[in-house]
Structure formats: C-alpha cells, structure tokens
Image 1 (spheres, rainbow, N blue to C red):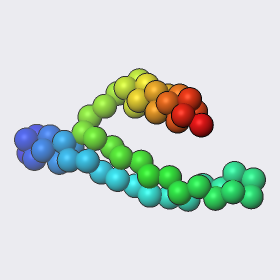
Image 2 (cartoon, one colour):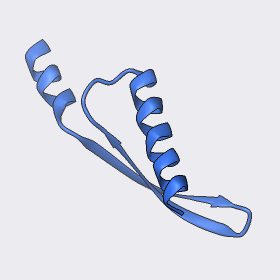
Image 3 (tube, rainbow, N blue to C red):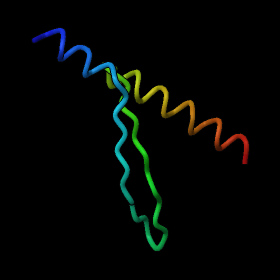
Length: 56
C-alpha cells in the first residue's frame, strides 16, 4: 500500500483557480510535484517572481 501512495505522490498534480485583486482577475495555476517541503516551494516561487520582475 505504501508503494502505491509513493507512486501517486510522484505524479505532478495541477490546480487552476482565479484570484481577484482589486478589479483585476488573475488565473493561477499551481503544480504540485511529488513531495516537496514548503521551503522548496516558496524558494522556487520567490526566484520565479524575482526573474519576472527583473525582466519587466
């Protein structure tokens, strides 16, 4: 049973939702890739945000 759970957790899972901030609606996609710690997820998000800001 544990092996089945591990195999399931390794497959990416994507969630889509809309978030409204003021009058702007953003489409947000979240991809969960297996077992990651919160620290890894936040670090990846911060790096992507910093690169996007630098490119604008």
